[in-house]
Amino acid sequence: MAKNKLEKFRECKTFTNLIQVGYFDLLKDYPLKGHWAKKYFRNQNPIVLELGCGKGEYTVSLAERTKDKNFIGIDNKGARLWRGCKTALEKNLANVCFIRTRIELIERLFASNEISEIWLTFPDPQPRNSKENKRLTSPRYLTHYKNIMVPEGIIHLKTDNTALFEYTLETIEKHKHSLLFHSFDLYGLNLNDEASSIQTFYEKMFLEQSVNIKYLRFKLG
Image 1 (cartoon, rainbow, N blue to C red):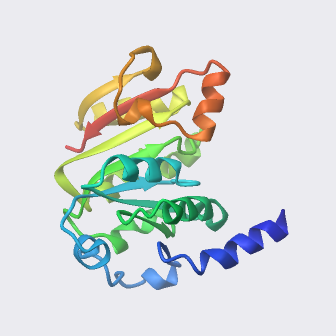
Image 2: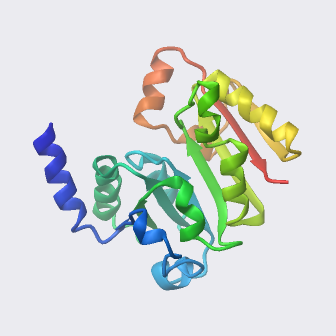
Image 3: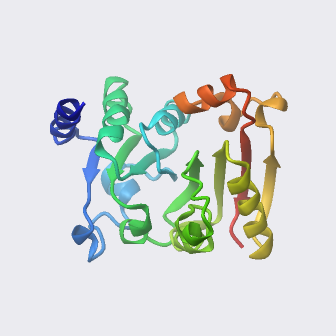
């Protein structure tokens, strides 16, 4: 396993669609901040982030379906990102890239009004109260998102965890954000949108175990 990870790390260094940014690299703003669409993707299309993207399954699937948007998956685990990068290259997807960095540093990567959507797909629920600030839907992280999103930007959350889902609903209400849609059983609705038509490996596993998938989308107030 260790050897396999080392091989993936080595291959990651050769991927043209992977940017690896360390903490000390972001003591100052990243050079592409405010210019991702024009200078990296070479277009003016909206940018969509998947935070905590893991193997990049959702990022790649979204990029395949929507060619008039740019997609960036962010995670701190290089061995996970290897799969997403490799798949995107194999599919010749020019509208997707991945960044290996810590999510709390995104304001160093992106400028105000640069991001149109954010997807949070099965994030760590951080169940202990002492870990609330690490939840990706905590007020701390929502502030980060607000500082890089367009005014009408949309945030999506998919999770198997009821406690995190309810916490997010409470946070949206408490801080007067705009809840657009929510369901405690996404697949009981027979929808055919981006939320229900793309499933990750772990999502399929949850469904096989009869675990309801929760989904919501909202705008920041």
